Amino acid sequence: MVEEQHVSQYGSLMDVKQSWLEGWLCHEYTECYVYYSCYKDETDKHIKKIWETCLLQEIAHLHKAAECLKKYGKKEWQEVIPDGNFPELLAFKSTKNYVRDVIANTVCNTAHREGYVCVNDLDDSAEFFKYQKIVNANEKMTPSHSVIEAHIDKFGEDYRYEDSPSPIESLRRRNEDNTTLGRVKNCK
Image (cartoon, rainbow, N blue to C red):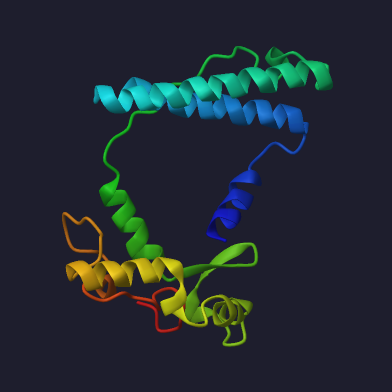
């Protein structure tokens, strides 16, 4: 469900004036750009080979999208992506501090219609809480929580890798699963 939500959100960034075929071409072009950036930036030769394989697959997809655009859309790819050159390649570096800051400042947020609100600010009758009662009626039966519980039972703590304490105090207890954070009021 999170997957569908974020796909809808980044899908809404698409140019609505493009045809489906033009959008497909741009999607494949973007995936090639990302994988090429990963390939060029990677220093581990084994991982670099994985990025290369992914890039080659995406290039094949890009060619197919261009072929379909020409056949069915009666357009050349250059009419959609004029010069075909990638912008400056992405450089990958640690984002741990940024991610920790985002988590610390948004862990209690949830989607509410077209925006985001703190779960504490939702009305008790909000659809969010109704949804939680249906889908997560017994959080111990939620697959992700079952996996965490099994790992804690076997190893004494959850499976997270940490090089410093979580920015969220309630997540620092690694010997118990937190099933309420971001789901119920009194979120902190």
